[in-house]
Image (tube, rainbow, N blue to C red; front, side, top):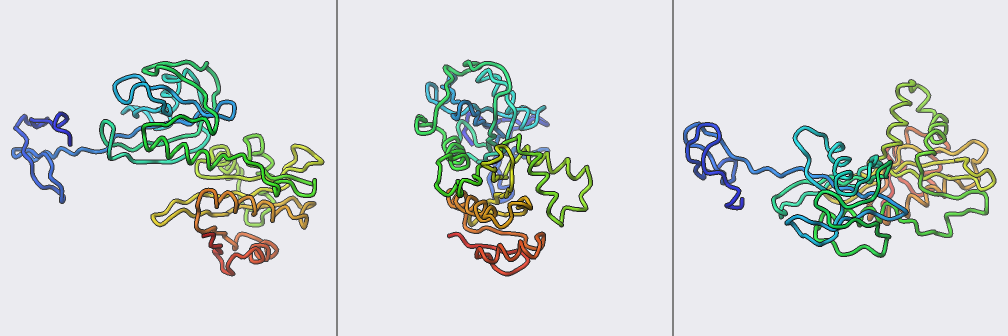
Length: 323
């Protein structure tokens, strides 16, 4: 703990604090009332605000890394949620009113600055306001991929790298298949089409309307979820299949979990499922995932045969080792 932030007297009884080992660590404690001063990390929030296929950065003012570009960020106040703090920080620093789209990542910074903390990054889209430098920002600007300046904070760099991986738009020849359909990442307007396809899965037949409302909400939020859809080329806007990939970060690496996948009845046997799985595998490789898991018990006999033919292990919770 930096000496300038150390309290000298007990906030409860006023006795001078002393250093004592508590729970394997040396901490400031009160010999009179036994108060222990814990130096816990401070929660913060950051945003990747998407504008014109780029991300908003602010040139910092204040006394911490002034004049350097960073993502809009700040500390969470005691009377607000992390989400509320993110929306407030966007308005204060960039002038933009935003809606939060999904969680990008949670990172810790024990090295500071100026004190240790935990920061939660969200992907966000503007819903109002105008882009302008506010609060302690000197400038605000939208940067495109490939044009991002060096940023001083490790956590900001990590969040931006993850955003680039999650939202890479590089086209691949396999994204289009014989002119019949193409695969892309889902957008908010695809929600009802995805729900209609979900209703084709036998395991979902007993869901209540309340359950379906929760499903739609999860699709809209997609905090740790990536959804790919197959769209018909002959009927633009018609979603003919989808796959949902959940991202699971473990101590030994990243894993992906495919819980939901469905193809429209009139497009089965046309290679839609294989194309969706191929897009998922490419995405998993970009994210350096080590395994893909599938809950085969939720699928039909045909679905089980499909995943086994694709190389997944023959078990109730099937998996495919990627690397």
